[in-house]
Image (cartoon, helix red, strand yellow):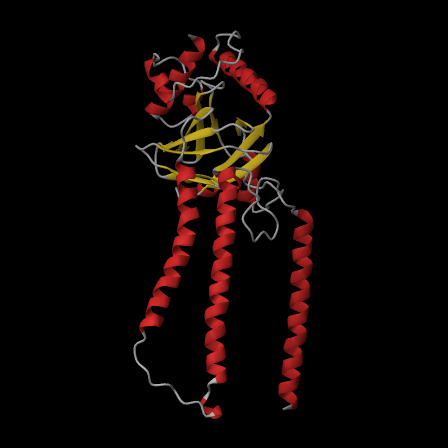
Amino acid sequence: MKNMAKTLTDRGSRLVLGLAVWGLTAAAYAAEVHDLSGGPAVNQIDLPPPVTPIAQMQHQLNDMVMIICTIIFIGVFGVMFYSVWAHRKSRGAVAAKWHESTPIEITWTLVPFIIEILMALPTTQAVVAQKDTTSPDLTIKVTGYQWKWGYDYLTGEGEGISFVSTIDQAQRALSTAGTPKGDDYLLKVDHPLVVPVNKKVRIITTASDVIHAWFVPSFGVNQQAIPGFVRDTWFRVEKVGDYYGQCAQLCGKEHAYMPIQVKVLPEDEYKAWVASEKKREAAARGSGGGVASAQPASDSGIASGSDASAGHAQPVAAEQPAEQSHSNRASAGRAGVEG
Ligand SMILES: [Cu+2]
């Protein structure tokens, strides 16, 4: 008995010591890593703060369903535990012997049916809204590659802009060395996607090799990018800032290293970015400046790119895997800029 008590105290003190060490280590890490605005938070348990109407809808749905589930859970288990406790044998409880009850059967069919309809109505509304990609202010094609993202601005004032977005190489090196560092670890890219605030952005996804998925939690957007297919989704960000996501479809050995960074800018800063980006791309093509002026917004949809001449020099495509449709689309967009 004495031995047992000693073992228990030993175990107890070891547990306390272990917890203290764990607590200190956790505190040390917590001091190093902070919440990332637009990305993951330390010890986050809820969904990320929503910045689009769709993400808000998803939050409300999530909360509503969680509340309904909790009420049902407490209700069902409450009745069950009360029944077991109040009608136990030692109290002399005798089981009732009835069979079949029409009112009960109608009730336990109708009540879940009504609850399901109550949940299905707002859910259907949200799914339909998620799929409504009509009349966007700008359209961007997102192409998944092993292991990076290609962005082509198809319509809107950035029309013709095209680049590839790859993980920050310094962070990639930190990962190889096994020394994670920074709040945006493995989320920073060399060339983020840039969009204007409060504009409806339509995203068209496809891939050149295997299936990827373009996932930005704060936008409530997760769309698969499938080779040979086009899928689309949309977002309208209501708050300026940087937002982060990752490829959400296992796509090979560097799957963890193809993050998504979206820079949401105020209207005037976006215009300035478009101008500088066009200047940069024009310089890269060797044709000098002269195309810096922003293009008027086009509402003609992606079909407008099809009449453009294909096959002129495409600097971005050189560093990509051979992917015909990507370079065609990009040069098609560019021809519009030049012509
Ligand atoms: Cu991927």
